[in-house]
Length: 173
Image (tube, rainbow, N blue to C red; front, side, top):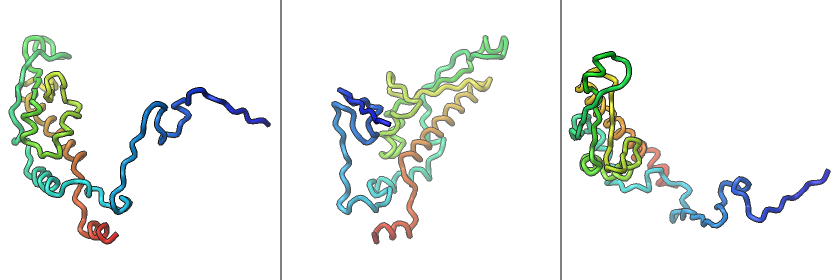
């Protein structure tokens, strides 16, 4: 049984291992820390003061701390007969990113523009709700969605606090 070799004039990206850069590109390899970067806590790359401020902010953050935002109403769609055709209950609320940046800690600010609710054209968060038959209920649903999104951004950006025995273990290594 003979093995045939295939010679490519240009390497196919599907044949390259994942750790190799594509032809014509350069790969950047992260530099290791002074201790080799092998044994370090996950939160060691963060500023301790910023982490402490973010964790204190999270403990005191409630839905009431959110700004009001700019809410517009329009006609909802879907079943509901004549009622849905006559009333404007669909609520669309926008919050400027600058307005939200004032209430979140500095660790969360870069993540604001990565949210699924971010609208690049207006540089704002735009959330809509039409589940309820009431304007007020839909407006409150928008605020609840914003609160959940900010909490999710916090959980993605801020690592959990290390247990004291884990911290001493990493210091010893």
